[in-house]
Image (cartoon, rainbow, N blue to C red; front, side, top):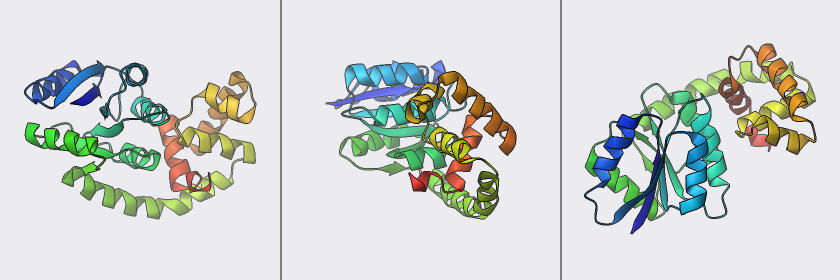
Length: 218
């Protein structure tokens, strides 16, 4: 029996997933969550084989942060990210962090069941539509690499360290632990960095770290 958990902040999506899994004799839904924090807590508590995780939940980086925390568990499940057609940048980040697959939320029930079974066997799944968009995003990312490196070069060494850790999905408290700084000090660095690079939120800073090659240096 494949133990499955899914997380999405929309009740309609969770209800749809519940319905699609209802008739599968080899899949048991052992938990569900409506945000990243509860997704991590559920994964830690029930030890699923497979998780379907919304790539963007209540906060812009909620799904990305949850993915990082779930994959850091002692026995992590295979995680496929649920995405829509306008989430290309988040897909790139999730791929870098180690997601096992990407599925569109409007996937057909039979295809979803196959994907869950493939993930449980250790495979990877990628919706064809997502694959084509990822190729385009990769090409665009290559073109964006030089401007990203230029922006990163304008930061201090400490600020680049902060951006790299944001790119890993770490919270302010976790960054403080890594760099031996108080959470308040990290918050100040994050605010300064976002202002310097013209980023509206942490996800945009994480994308800059990705495009500028900071994550490849870790």
